[in-house]
Length: 331
Image (cartoon, rainbow, N blue to C red; front, side, top):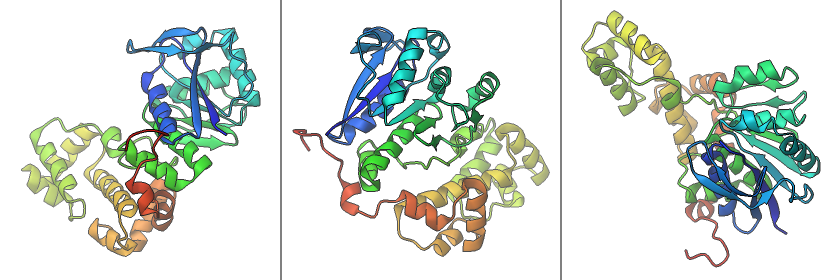
């Protein structure tokens, strides 16, 4: 029997909050049937102007029979949560659903519906303070990209909704199917929920000058190289003291912290993409010993390297080599 996924949208929603998770569920085969509901049936305009057709309005779609309710986010959420009919429908639908999820600021609609009291949730980091201030009954944690608290799943912004949807697919159908879907959608790496919202590419600013850019390029070109301040200064053509000051001012973090972050992400990729021993990965990416890598992973990711590998790499080569086709879909 198919599982019914119902997405809630509204004027000013973020389109990727809908289309990203929608494609994840659609790519998992015939397991899921996706529907879209809005305050009124018909065209709904996203924050970027994209029009999406809502097949149902809350007045004509009964709240029963929903497996998973997914509430999207977007700038329009502040207006949408003032819509009493919409909020009441979400509360009624959630009461009968097996699980409830929100993407980004969609969490504000769940909170308005009274679904989050005492629960731990996440949202886009830019809305963290507002959510905590307006809903002190909710435990807000904006470090992870998604959080599960019982039947309620919440995620950070935009692309994190795809990570959340993949986790829901895995919860239903297993890790191999989730990995096959990720491969079909060309998602480079299915991220764990506990991974920080702030990867190197997002968490740090971009270099503003050529000397600092040269140092950053050297780090990414060979994460396992020594990369002490003297060596990076040589790449930059600056004195070590001058580079330390410029690097921190331009990127928001000192060189040593940036190097460690790049090394951790390189090790994450190696752990999920191959069978190289943890000890070898530690040496290759500048951690010297497996114990140093383990301590760094625990501090940054809250998990050991071996556990990270076991949790986030599929063991079935056939599953990751081929997507899960829809019935009648050409291969």
